Amino acid sequence: MKKLFTHENRMIVYNMKNVLAEEGFETVMMNEFIGGGVGDLPTFDTWLELWIEDENRFEQAQGILQQILQGGDREGWFCRGCQEQNDASFRICWNCGRSYE
Ligand SMILES: [Zn+2]
Image (cartoon, protein in one colour):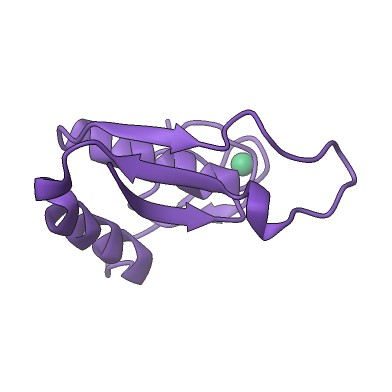
């Protein structure tokens, strides 16, 4: 197991997991059930982490994440739940977690 990605915004980590799952990567979430309550400041310790099962595919998975993080020239989409703009590579809204429709 190797740590692939972490971010203070859990929705972004969930999105990465979804994207990698679609690409056939086995990943595991760490700190999924830890974290402050509403109103608490998030700390680095409780950032959601995404780990990959198969270390041999680590670099391949990293490449996919990099593509997502850098965005592309594809058009994004606006969430129907909260109207936030999302990158085209996101399957769920980074802000409220609603899935792309
Ligand atoms: Zn939203």
